Length: 184
Image 1: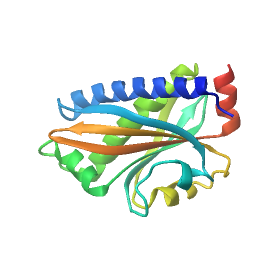
Image 2: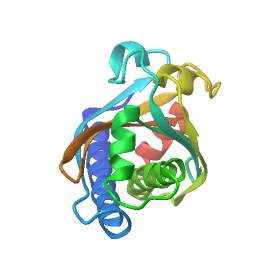
Image 3: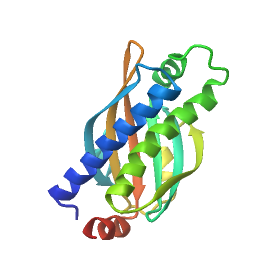
Image 4: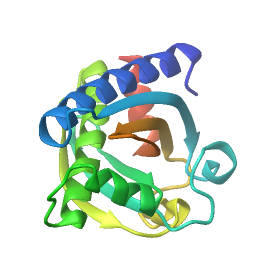
């Protein structure tokens, strides 16, 4: 099981990753982009509906990605579809909003996962990001990951223009791999 020290480490790495992602967003999307970590929780896939925040019963705008490197993981950035559209449109002249949302979502996920990986001494990189539009549980359970898979949930506030939008990033990691990496 994860200790309080492990959770604090994960939270610190997630905050560093959000800061790194915000910096990239300011350069590539809008100058007033910002991310703030509001909460981090660790649960299992089977306990997700009872233990983690998500947009209940709603179809979300999601970016699902796979990460490879020393710690194989899957990630989902999820937000309300209206908020996702507002985020993309905060930069005028975006030609393809769906492609822009996938790129922006991957940017946020990558910053967080790369920093968590670095904190664990692992080199992580993104692979195969795609748009998903279902409820969070359906997307995560649709990966066919075992029910004991660790899910690190990073709840963020995204500043974009005059808007402050809630975002959740779900990182699914095999618990044995996470435990081994944290113990190292």
